[in-house]
Image 1 (cartoon, helix red, strand yellow):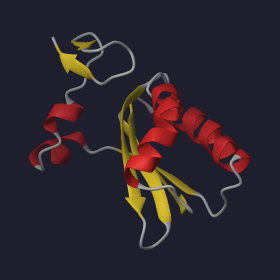
Image 2 (cartoon, rainbow, N blue to C red):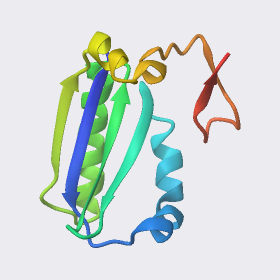
Image 3 (cartoon, rainbow, N blue to C red):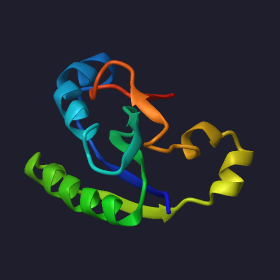
Length: 122
């Protein structure tokens, strides 16, 4: 079953394009995680928080990644991390425009620019 994982934590920056440049390698690493369908990066500079919303193919991959990413954030000396996993209600989500993401089938998708980029439907 598809599982969504939500991370949120206090973050001192950098933000925007500076974060994009600083985290490019991390993003490439995250893109190779087993079971990851996609990640949305979140920034709230005014509140000093960052995070991400991840969609995984199953709860086991989401949990394995949660543990790995919590260790990574701790090594970066970031504290106050919250991480919550949720089962995805696919039927309702499709009704609210999440259809393309929830129709993910690794047998029907292929990389556009190699493994560093999001796949497209075949």
